Length: 434
Image (cartoon, rainbow, N blue to C red; front, side, top):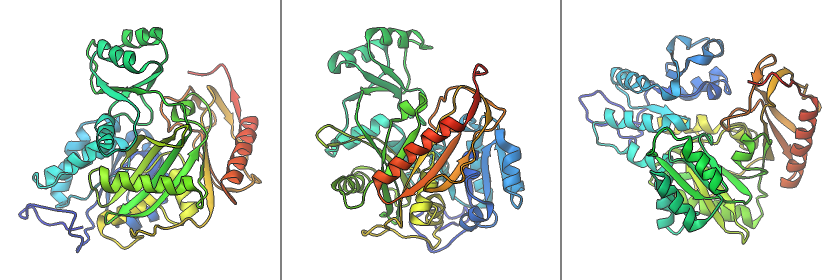
């Protein structure tokens, strides 16, 4: 990626002839802690600046002994508008527009910063908004003939009721720019509707939408584009939806069998969405959710220009042999790495992951996973002694395990057995829930 002094008006990413060491990464602590410092530095260069949340400051500083002095910590990082101002000023000092975001909450502010640095000659925010505003996203997909469920924005209780009168119950209401299933509510009756609107802080609803509820199996699709071509695309079948996960069920996903019609159809639809319907972002991670309708039609739930959460990154590492987030950073920086091509990188083995939410109460102990059949990677995020309540977002699991097998069926069965074993062996002191 080309960078220059501010006498030159643009840092346009189309020119990748030169690579700069000046990189600014906006990243939540959970993602930072998943990858060793030396691997981050191999992608970011030896002198990056990292902006993250202050809540896990001590953990992060221990994780990054070499570059801890280059990490900027902020209270309420996700909602702290000061971050945007400080990153912009630092980028100006460094003469770079390489401001990289890996999480949903950071995508638009990183795009805005890059546009301001380039003095309006780029359109990063205008492209990225279609991956954040779920109404604009689905409206655009529908224009290209890609199936989506009936939906509408609403700004008042009567607009919400009018949509329900047209399509019937149940419906889903959610923020247009939501993340991690935060703020999503299912309405199944007039009583639910009245309860929902009665809790509103204003009679005007801002940036909200409603859509027809879909009760169907869900497929998650993660991938990476480089030079506007797919480097890898990996679809997995989920056992439950994100709302059921938040409600306490374990989320288990297993890669689709590569020789199945479903796999081929998903790959074709994902490419049509990104290469034909959505705005072009040549270097891009993506996460796509699809429903499989009763007649086999693939219906879009949503798409984001970042990698999926939970175990999606480690699943790709175990299946393909590379870290997609680090490969994305290399692509943005113009470094050598995996490249996009029409043939796609194929997985080296069949894997899946399972994420298990906490049980309300005080976590007493976690079981020893040694001996678990097919276990490839195991991440404990639960902390014994800590008191947990029900999850509010879909990234609050206490354990995530990547499991391998011969095919989709074997991986799914091994994850079912893992879930049964873990829930039997983990110890919570009930009654202490917050």
